[in-house]
Image (tube, rainbow, N blue to C red; front, side, top):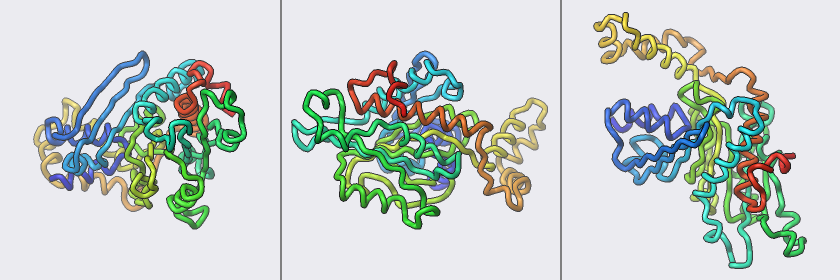
Length: 331
């Protein structure tokens, strides 16, 4: 049973969806998973804590903290709304970061390495590289600047390492090489995510302190970018930009089954037998089972959402940058 639930959760990168699927299947809350929800004007914040290995196995997500920010405003080209969401993102990001604990010495600020994962040649996968383009990098100036010029800023560097198909090198291997030379105190990795529900595309931001396995939501398992692999704490962040065709067909069938004119015998047969999976396979055969779908206007969505994430990171990492001025620091 636990293995089946974990397989279901593997259809999404979002912890909130994974938790909801397990709750729906089991009909009750999950032991070892804490949930907290907060409504903030036009955004909903959900904080999930996976407390132990048993809970991790049940929902298919590593032990740790997962924060989800949901807002339809993320899809809309509205500058004030995006600045507001950047401010919320900065607040939630700073919930997961203890800057004092990261310092090597009391007088030395922590160095943060921001990694933009993904393929800049494939628009739905270009979120990470686009975010890096807007990050305020300061590490190269930090050591040579006078003390008063460094107040309110932290040493930040950034990298978009590309993907295995472009470089022939595992992304994690490139990052590990940079970590060995730069010695950052924290890594923030941004990647495009996969969702189970189409309503979450480009309207949800997830932050976690568990690191990330690039491509895991699409069934690809690369070397992890985690504290265990990198030797330093890793914050993972992303926005779902794609959905698997299996999820679309699955949601469609679920909607049909909830219609009042569906015969109860047919409903029971689909829920208890193998007919449900067989219908999905028949629809998607022979090639569409691997089809990955992105929303319309993905080019503009990536441009807009990358600025929201970069703005939130800039505000979080540099105390003197205010959320209302975030656009001034976006390149």
